Amino acid sequence: MANDTGAGATDLGRRIAEQLGKAGLSLEEAAERAGMSATYLSYLETSSAPNPTQATLTRLAAALDVAPAALTGAGLNLPPGQGGPARGAVLDELSAGECRAYVAAGGVGRFLFDDKKRGPVAIPVNYKMDGDDVVFRTGSQEDIVAEGTQHQRVSFDVDHFDDALSEGWSVLMSGTASVISGPDELTRAQALGIQPWAGGDRNIYVRLVPSQITGRRIRITDQ
Image (cartoon, rainbow, N blue to C red; front, side, top):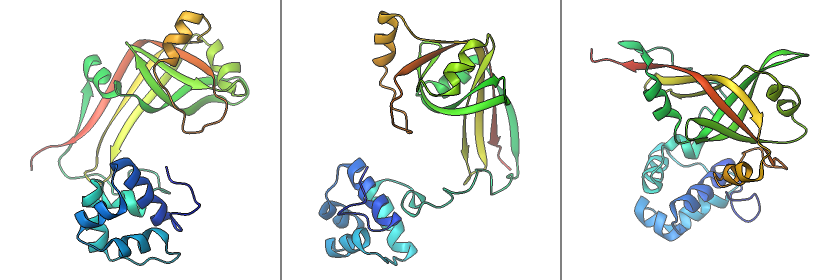
């Protein structure tokens, strides 16, 4: 991800710099793909007050193989589901196999446990699947370690919402969690390559072993 110094004078500029890096393109290559001059693309990236047209953003997003919202940051400060339900929406129950397929790639989920002081708590964490188990990293200062891993019953939720189509899915896994301590198991967990978005010193690994997995999916049927 680009830093704030030398590139990306605005949020748009930082997003352009970030997407250029992800696409592995130079500024000149991206400008050529988007049908604009490299000088103008440089201006969009570094200007303190860029004002591109929607058509320009659409062409640039296509050149970088991302949605225009990835450059504008549309909706980043809003919860999902602002568009409301779509016509023809159907709610399906997912099989255990479908649930596992949805969560297999890893990403961000919510660890749910019962805090003695606050009650039920949901903490977002970056996770990876190790077989059928959920593994995530946390820090020693987190209440997750002090409280959540001491309870026999915990849960983990993963979901995804597509505001453009008003479709989505959610998976809930319930079971037991424990801090990974054995050297062999710890090496296995580290090899998963989990990178917490929050950064910092998060060198404690937690394994959740699900005993129950359920899920639901909202899809749009033909009218």
